[in-house]
Amino acid sequence: MPNASRNDRDPIGWSLIVAGLFLALALFRLAEPGRYYFDEVHYVPAALKLLELIPANREHPMFGKEVIAGFIALMGDRPLAWRIGPLLFGAFGLFAFARFVWHLSGRRRATITATVLLATNFMWFVQSRISMLDMIEASLCMVGLWQFAAALRARKRGPARLHLAAAGIALGLSLGAKWSSAPALMIPGLWFLALRIRETGWRFIGRKGAGPIPGVSLVEAAFWLGLLPMLVYWATYAPAMFYSIRPTSPWGFVEQHRHMIALQDSVKKLHPYRSVWYQWMVDWRPIWYQFESIDGHQHGIVMLGNPFSMIAGLFALVWGIWASIFRARRDVLTLVLLYASTLGIWIVNGKPIQFYYHYLLPGAFLMAILAFGLDALWERRDRWRHLGTGTLVGSVGLFVVFYPIISGAPLPTKEFYNFWMWFPNWR
Image (cartoon, rainbow, N blue to C red; front, side, top):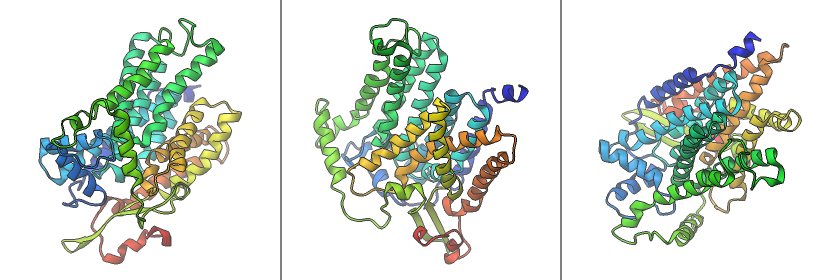
């Protein structure tokens, strides 16, 4: 049992170390390039206009642009200011992901492994270093899930309510950054309802003192996890209510969103980097965020998933479905549902043009599933346990190998990028 006891200790120290190392590595050369690249051309100008209360980029919610605008107001209109907000959210979101996995499972080794896998899955790193909305949204989603899982573990009503309130605020802000996290934001409320039904049966509405958190009724949970996020979400539109032209009406919630959906659906021009969900799953169509010569050196940033961990994650997903059904692994089932829902929204979404970075959240949950799969291998006493170690080492090793082409490091020659372009569709 000594091994089990070691695996039961809270790995918060390791989580902080991994998140800190991630922050330091991602901060290096963050201000390069010294101009907008990829979708920064949309979001940074929109943030600058927001500071002047001029409407721009109205097809997306407000909070992500408010974060970017806030750092520009604090630090000036320069590259470091554009990108520092998403980076800080990315590092904190990595830590929040670690805390979520820990509170979900209570498994130390799986938590540390999941944190390392996400830090090195390429996508979290690349998206943390660019001034876009996705990292702010994804990180706040992780915070909301962490706080909800912590509320369930708290058991006592007072601390649990604080965690539920924090979860509601984070979920609302995540939706206020971008809508992609919407399916994941529904999971806590459905999770609470499912746990209450499991305990009370179909008398789940009227039973007092029942439920996963004694003293927190279904109505109260609906406030923290349903109404509060929507109130916070709508509050993020406050600056738009003071636009100098065409301000948003505080009462025009439905009409505002009809207009936003119409704007998003209006983008129909084909893009060379467009892709669809099944291509994301197999790393088929990455995106070149940057490829240019600066001061005589070639630089490139490719948005690609770690070829090792992303493909290994698909095998782990099959195991995760099996473990959920035949081993009653509710922690794994939760992650499978989060993966399926955040990917599924893009399967049914009518948005005509989609991109690989939409796989950011599903890819993160896939890393947690992979970590649980590796943890199951390490619990074995045969040669299969070495496969778990090899998978983790391979994932970290490929991150080191690909670091120059995901960080925009100067390359020796213009053609040197071919070293990393293993398949024609990656070009």
